[in-house]
Every structure is written in C-alpha cells, then in structure tokens.
Amino acid sequence: MLFLLFQIGQDHYALDARQVSVVLPLVSLKQVPASESWVAGVFTYRGQSVPVVDLSQLATGRAAQRRLSTRIVLTHYPAPGPDSRLLGLILEKASEIMRREPSEFRDSGLDHRNAPYLGPVTDDPRGLIQSVQVHDLLPPDVREQLFPAVEK
Image (cartoon, rainbow, N blue to C red; front, side, top):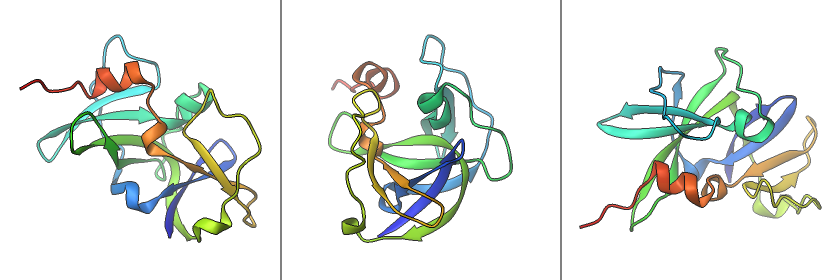
C-alpha cells in the first residue's frame, strides 16, 4: 500500500493514498462562520464546494505553517448519502510517499478517544509514523455542518 507522508510538528503521519483524490498547493479559503477553529474554510474545486480542515490545528491547536511543502490534500470523505464527498486537509510537508504492508502497522498502545482519527503506527528510520483515518476526522456536529444531508 502507498501512503502520503506529512508532519504535524516534528512527528510523522501517513495517509492511505487510496483516500487521496488530489494534492494541491494552498489556495485562498472562504471562512466558515461559527465553526470550529480547525475548520480552515471552504473553496471551489471543479464546481464543488470543498470544506478544508487544518489537521495541525485540530491535533495541536497550532495552525499549519504556510510554506511551499504545505498542501491541501483532497480526500474522499464518507458524507451522508451513498457517495463520498471531498474534504480538504491542510498538511505540512506533504511531499513524500512511502510503501508499507498493512501488517507492518501495529496498535499504538495509547488511548486516542479524544483523537479517534489516529490509527496504528509503523517503525521507520525517521521514528514512529502514525496513520490517520479520514473517516474518523470529523465529530458528528462538524460533519453535519460541513456535509448537511440533502433532503429530496
């Protein structure tokens, strides 16, 4: 399996490449009033409004640093209904991929109830790399705000 690597502070994380639609440079975002501080905003991509989450802000309370290697990664997010929607993630140093077998990841041994998106870890010369589970990123109230169910 392929993983997109990125950093939050000095720690390394991995995102399953199957969850990634496209990696874009940073773009200007429209703010989302009355949302969590880590909801960075929304922008239009190919005619679709895409909400964007600053993963560094979510995890540490510190906004991602704006540098050339900071990207908006569009991911497939399971929204209400039969289809997935795009969810943008602002990720620092999102410019490298790694190949790992699922069996090379193991439980971190920590309680992540306050960060359910944190998955298993794998060893690497850079240190432990922890996977991030896109489908567990948004608490229900934020998911409803960013992806309201469409009534027919």
